[in-house]
Amino acid sequence: MTDKIISINRKLNGFLYPLLMLPLWIILYWNLNFISNYFIDNILNLSKGVHLTETLRFFIYEVPKVMLLLILIIFGVGIIRTYFTPEKTRKVLEGKSLFTGNILASLLGIVTPFCSCSAIPLFLGFVEAGVPIGVTFSFLIAAPMINEVALVLLAGLFGWKVAMIYISTGLIIAIFSGWLIGKLKLEKYVADWVFSIKSGKTEITEDKLSFYDRINNCYQAVKEIVGKIWLYIIIGIGIGALAHAYVPADYLSSILGSENWYGVPLAILIGVPLYSNAAGVIPIVSVLIEKGVSLGTALAFMMSVIALSLPEIIILKKVLKWQMIAIFIGIVSGGIIIVGFIFNYIGF
Image (cartoon, rainbow, N blue to C red; front, side):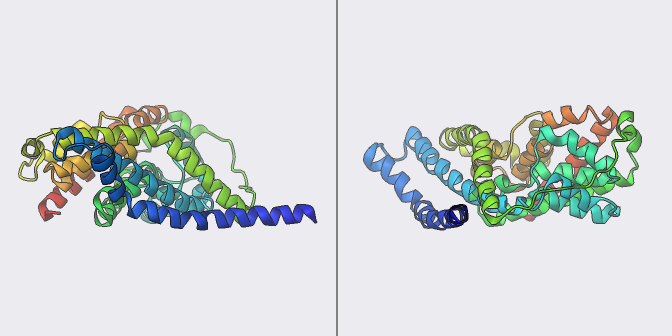
């Protein structure tokens, strides 16, 4: 009886604690601008309009705003992710036709936990299950590029309109890049040993989680993800704050403005060799746009940094031949260039 009471109390605490914290989150988030300005102007008593003052103002406002948004969205997405494991994802994609599989793989990539270090196990698991190569690549493109971190940072810095543009165009790139790779029949450029794996298919057995377990997993997800990326956020916003205050407004726009046809390809050439995640690159993209860089060019830069991560490419070299790596980079880069030109032309 005592154990049952303890179990009920744990479940109630797990459910009530987020509900009690939500009003505090709302109060903090909607008053951040007032708090940061009061701290800069009244407590530190810094002069308005000075470069150092505006750098600190940008930094002190953006860091807690991004962190608050991140915690809320990671917690919410964490509940969804408790229903999607890599094994379940593989099972859903198994036996699907090419284009249907590309769409499903790209959508599942958004909610499935993924990082560069898990690229090879996922790739091998998909191949073993008979998932087409093109469908596998749709997942590998979507998973790191379109996630809750990108959504939160874009929404917080640019608004939901830009965030949804990024998500939708990212999905289109993932779907059609994977579809094209599948149509080209590039299996010959996968390492020979990959297809010789005969580990056999095993039944997927998973423990059923209670609601309390799912909430607890959300806490762990917040702790783990924020713990991994907080430094990227600090550095990214710090660079953004310095650029916000010190970089002349017309300098970047003269190079990467929409009137320059080479702006999008140049942004991708700069972005591909770099390595960062969404947390590190989006605050920088925010300042690029503020300084006159067109939205299409800024999104192209961001997508190239995240989707064509250098560590992921190096890791995938273990299972792919260089020809496949080059085709993968070329197709994804081409999709990003098209997206960049379209949004520059539309004039978002």
